[in-house]
Image (cartoon, rainbow, N blue to C red; front, side, top):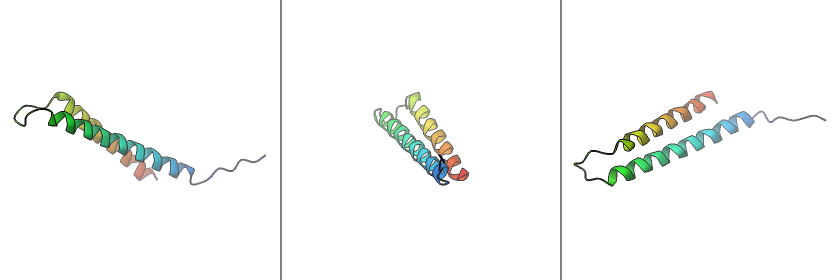
Length: 70
């Protein structure tokens, strides 16, 4: 019995992981936006807004590493 491994499988998996990371980053941005919008413009944003923005940027950076690895 022979097993056939699709040579495109690693590329496809990397693409799927990248898409998931970008979706997670988009969600983090949405959460940050919603939290920032919940306070008046003159008030400081909750610290969690910065945390969500940093998380979104880290997810996009990680997603980009999959782009370069393909």
